[in-house]
Amino acid sequence: MNPAILLVDVVSSNREELKSFLRHHNCDVVTCQDAESAVICCSRMQPDLVLLFDTLPDTTSFALCRRLKEDPLNQLTPVVLVLPSTDQWDIHRGQEAGATDIWATPSSLWDALQRVQTLLRLKVYMDEQAKSALFSLARGVDSKRHLRSGHSELLLTYAEELGKSFSFGEDDLQELRIACWLHDVGKFAVPESILLKPGPLDIAEMQIMREHPIIGEKICAPLKSLRPILPVIRHHHEKMDGSGYPDGLRGDAIPLKARILQVADIYDALTTDRPYRGALPHDEALKTLFIESDRGWLDAAVVLKFSRICKYDAFFPLRGRTMLASYFA
Image 1: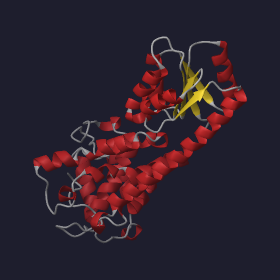
Image 2 (image 1 turned 90 degrees about the vertical axis):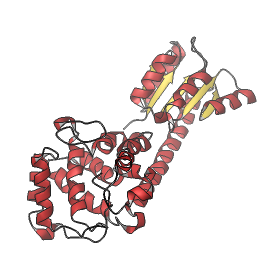
Image 3 (image 1 turned 180 degrees about the vertical axis):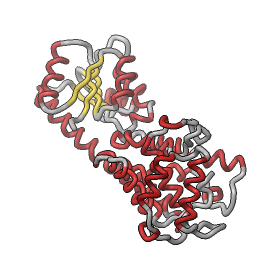
Image 4 (image 1 turned 45 degrees about the horizontal axis):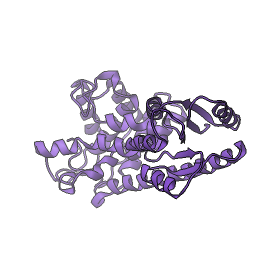
């Protein structure tokens, strides 16, 4: 996939020449010529790099950079301010505005290309480091006090088999795998007194717990590579009858990957030990899934496919103590 560049500059032959040159070198370039369109376009396309020329009639590059960086989605997006010339005061102002770099107008198109490629390589590195940190955070949530050791690996197995039964291609399966690892990352913000409570949550605790899909979505949103799984993270606690959270989605409005993850996740919850009860046998867990499907909570088609996949007890062996007491909050 080609890197996406947002080029913000007034209409000119120089802008068109730079756009054409970057496109010729395998960059997807979108242009804007005023502040409002730049803000809207940046939000929609989530570029890998913003080149912001100090030529706009309605604002300065410093002010626009500050506006772009106010959006949490742009926190990891490099923004370069391109000025006719630069001095130490410009560099200071640019850094305060959140710019990644401040350039004097490049001496040639090749000079611009070299700088752009360097920043794009840096962006890839930053994204990988951020993703690695997110996975570490998710593993920390997963193994909190050793109550959920191995939860996400087992959940991934169940969800992947379900995805295959729906004829998912490799790209969709990979998104489902990543969602399995990160769907509960928002629980890092939930106090341990709630997360590990050995019994039902009260109303206030339940409200805090129900924030975790939204928090997880916000944590993952700045990473462009994770954007496809944001709906799965946000909606894996919705119910088919609209009684779930956080948005009360109904039926097919709930993403299929979220419905798949939910069934696999609940099965894993039922068949693992919890502080106040032991793991349920496979048959009882499946019976519970069908009951919740009949109540209009779970997708009946997903539950049916899951029951066919795990037809024999040996397919998904029972595990030890791996699930949070408050999962069903």
